[in-house]
Image (cartoon, rainbow, N blue to C red):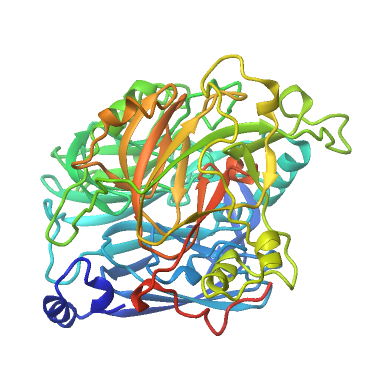
Length: 599
């Protein structure tokens, strides 16, 4: 992408000089997706991996660089790779969402993803976007500032990438297949992980635990990615403070905490202050989950890594107490004193500390006026069909199958067949007048409602039974190019309240407001922050409350909006925005790639 596309941030002559001066690079990668045997907790299983690595290989680049990844799949299940948080400006063909931006890769097929990293630094990540394959196919994208451009915070002594995840002893694909067949919950993972390792508190795991060496007085940048399928996490280093400096690859006004809270799909860049002279400390992650554990079970043992000051004795001397993971142990080893798993007050306090930080190289543009007002309810529902053969009845609430929905519509993915095209290709033809009316109605339905079709007391205690049974639909929400959009995501009390971390593809958005209970269009906007709201690409809808986001729809394409708790997406808690093209050449999509996969 050249200066014309960068013109919204830089004057043209300055842009040309900037591009020459910064020496933008093109990074080529060759990836093979295949099965590899992996052992954790004394269990060995075959896992779908990129280049045999778990987590997958990291990508390192500078802001403005172009990434080219040639992916070949040797596995039978269809796959795609999504580049989470990458804005994909006019490169929506490469966003990696099955039947939305591309048809998935079939066995022995290849596809080359190509995109530029614009106006973003920090940590992003990639993951598979088919079924539950992202449990094993995921990795970090580390974006440094342009050359000769510096961080707006203390330059770290060293950087460490920390990918937080989960491990199942069984086949993850069988886990989700069984859950969908039974119509209820899923079998919880057997361990939390840090960089693919459960750590010191799990059996047969200490020897391979991740380790970090630091020096007293140093400042270290931890690049955190929550790749967990279903859990938000507390993360901290025992007896150390952290300074959050970036949120989802956007600079933030720095703030200090003892531990961070990170939802599935989110990334954080935090500074670790090496403020001790010696010692060894646990870096740990622990589940944050508001509902009672009888409703949402989770691994109750923290994943751990070792942070060791240089010069301290060997890690083989580590000891820990398996019965109480919060006590001080030998050799100064202790876990962070995390809050209770359901401490909603801490979550609110952590979110309240987040503000965007303008710099000369990353400038924020908060929409002050709104062209399109949207209100989407998000939550659960039940399928009217109770059949879960061969079970006598489904294992969901009251014997029904559990669903997820947005505006009381459960997303129904298109049925794969050779005549199908992804939504983006239909939209590309639609904006050029090449799509017939019959095709438009059947395969490219732009009738997703701007508001719930039935208004009700979203957080009330006695909701009409009819609201518990959402309709199925494959409907897109159309957005004119360059519109300023305000979207309110409203939790509902159907089945139960929940924190839903929603991710919007192809766009970052400003968190301009949030609250408990029902959103009130007459009074809630008075509480909005339109000066320096945080910029995110994934953010949790408050438990029993609402969040208001704003963004500029300046990126034409088909962009998935979904809950990043994987079981919720599997239940259909998602929809798709279609942002129409503009009139200028830099406001329109290029043609589909010549090597575009076929359905």
